[in-house]
Amino acid sequence: MTYVKRLAGREESNAHIASFRPSLSGVVADGFLFKECIMKVKAKGLALAMTLSMAGTSAWAAATRDEPIQPITAPRTTHPAKVELGKKLFFETRLSKSGFISCNSCHNLSMGGSDNLKTSIGDHWQQGPINAPTVLNSSLALAQFWDGRAPDLKAQAGGPIANPGEMAFTHALAIDVLQSIPGYVAEFKSVFGSGRVDIDKVTSAIAAFEETLVTPDSPFDKWLTGDDKALGARELAGYKLFKDSGCVACHNGPAVGGNSFQKMGVVAPYQATSPAGGRADVTGKDEDRFKFKVPTLRNVELTYPYFHDGEAATLEQAVDVMGRLQLGRKYSEDEIGKIVAFLKTLTGDQPLFTLPLLPPSSNSTPRPTPFD
Image 1 (cartoon, rainbow, N blue to C red):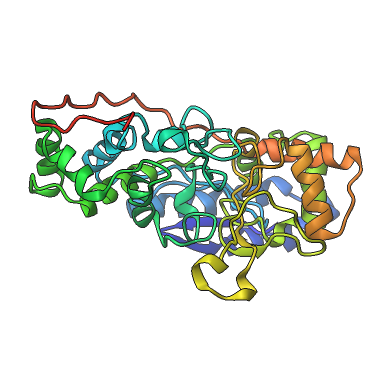
Image 2: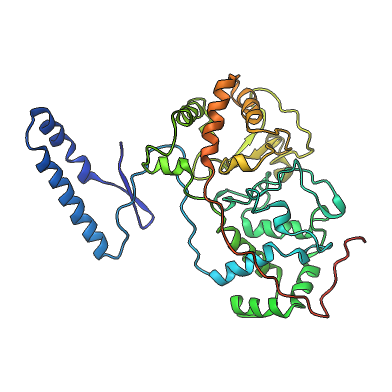
C-alpha cells in the first residue's frame, strides 16, 4: 500500500515507513526483536509529528487508498457573511416573476439538491427541457449545466433568473427588487462595501453559498481513508465490478464524475425523450452532438430520476442502461444489485444549516405577478 500524507495541498510519500519494511520482514522471519523495530517506527513517526506540530500544521492525516475515486473534504468558508447572503438569495423567490420560484425550487436541499422530477417546472407551469442536476458538490465540476455552457457556478447562477422558461424575470428587474429592500441593501454593503446591488454581486454571493454544498464522510469516503469496516462484502464486490467494468473511465475523481463530457450511447444509440443536443448546442460541432457532462454519482440514491431526460426512474434501471449502451455489457440482476449497493455508499453528510430569514419587502418593492 502507498502511504500518503497531505500537507499544504501537496502529497508526499512517507518514505520513512517504507524504509522499515525490509528490516521488519527480516525480524519477523527470524523471530528477533519485532518490538524494537516497532518502537523505532513509532519514535520516527512521533518525531515527525512533533516537527509538524511545531510548524503549525495539523497532525497525521489518515492514509488514503490509491483508487480512481478520491474522498471529498469538508468545505472551508473564508467569507461567512458572503455565504450567508448567498444562502438568502438561493432561497429568494422574489428573484422570479411569479414570486414563487427560487434556486431551491429545482435544486431542493432537502432532496439531494435536485427536485426528483424528470424535468423541472418553470414559470406558468412550463415543462423544462432537461433534468435538473444536483447542486451538491457542483463546485467540483469542470463546468455547469449538462452542456457545460457556464464555466463556473457564478456564471450558472444568473441563467435561470432570466430564463423565460424558468424564473422568467430579467436581471434588471431582479436587481430593482433587491435594491428596494433595505435589509438587502444593508447586507450587500456589509459584504461588498457598497449598497449598490448588481447581478455580478448577486451571482458571486450565490456561488459562494453553493461552494459550501459538499457532502463529505460518506461510507465510501471512510473506506477510502482506511476504515475497513465502512463497507460490507456486497458493497465492495459492487465497487470491484464498477471498477473492473470500466465505469471509472468516466466516473472518477472526488465527485465520481463531473470532470469530462462523454457521448451518451457509445455502443448503441440512446433514444432520448429530450430535445437537448448536448455539448453541440454550445460548440456547434457535430462531433459534440449527444455529448453531455458526466454527472456526479455522489448522493446518487437521492437524485432520481436519472440521465439528462430523466427517463431512468431507478438506480437499477440506470445501471442496466449504462452497462448496455456505454460498455456493451449486459449485467445480471445480481451484478446490478451489487453495483447499486456500492453506489449507495456514496451518500455523504448532507449540508446542515438554519433556513434564512429573508428581509421584508418595502412599500416600493415591485410585487410579483404570478398570473400575468
